[in-house]
Length: 304
Length: 275
Image (cartoon, rainbow over all chains, first blue to last red; front, side):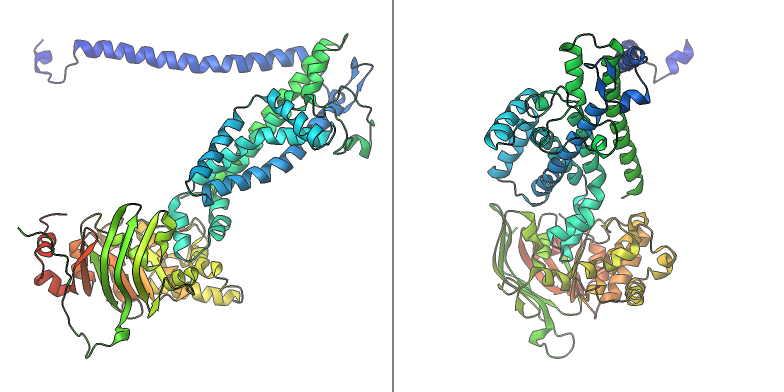
């Protein structure tokens, strides 16, 4: 008793209640965090389990045969690869250069604000609208016909805003004092960007670009009307199997292939559908891991 | 108590015989500067002499840093700035159309409050300025090494870093970083070195060493140093300019300014009664 009386820091009744609330909030937030992991794990486990009978090297390297009931997914896989490659060749330089302009050169006036607003809004456009835009703009207006180039352009437009935004953020994270030091020695803005700003923001920029690979590979809607096709006869081996599609050819793609065999085609083995889905998820995870690893590597190198 | 009189009290003195016109390194005439609508400098007319250390003192927001940034026209990079009046540096009006801002900044170095070495190696930091002015193209490797060694010796950093020239400049201590920031100006052979509170991020020992370094730059360079530290202004400068609310109140020899201030506001400020 006496020790309690002498304790000037004894906790009050209110504090006891506060502690309970604290515990409750902590466990709730923790539970919600774990809840996030459940769908991710569930999807992966479910997919791999269902896909297991189909998964093999041949599944990856063979072309679909006998109305998709046999063979593999080589055509769609290489088609997706080319789609991503061409769209990045278009979107990455455009987006990075635009981001550099917006962050390093543009003054804060209404034009800049308007462009920034446009970028934000472009990022919010649903992918099916991008698809219809691509159909109108590239296929009909520019007369590209439905082909790899038209689809890549459409996907490029879709990925641009995120590339621009992540480039801007990466550049903005380079301390202003570096730029000030350069300018005060008489460096032009471009010298400053080339020698100091870009080397120190390249990890962030590339992470943004790589994350868009996953998006470009996964979307169906933008390529639906602009170049994807259900089935195209491609060679089983040799150069023509490695590079089956030219820029003006229609092409198969994983996302579209999955859509077709799941909804439009009869008698496709279950495992093929899940196999295709598992390969797509695997690709996305692989690309994301690559970007995370890359970021860790580059971040370890820079210190200020 | 009287309000601040706008006229400038300048104590004339002749350090070495008769004063000549080319004793002045920097001369401003009726310099006014606005950030948007806010007037940061008002009718500033000042002559800063060649080869000595001039201190800029005054309370926060009085325009010291703004005035410093006028001298290499870096203010123009900070957006909405309007300037009227003249600035002559080495007898040349720096707002003339035939003045290259890059060459101006090459011959007027700037050192900052927070040491800001670039996130590259110590070696590359020293040569960075030559690189951006394409002055290093014709240099052989041994020439470059000589320049790096000479510059680092001049700031008393060579012995400390000679074995790790290739390591990142940002791994140095703050004091070493600040010395490096001074060293990287030297290969460009500047005439003037501007310093914006160069010691305020340093500890006592660092301050002493950097002050000694600044002291050693006298004669070879014209040094203009902004400081909040009265004791430092007293120790490290030859002349002092006291500024208040964008105006120059008093400009005289440091010893005179501190011992016998001509203006009431100067006296109150150096006694620490405000600011």
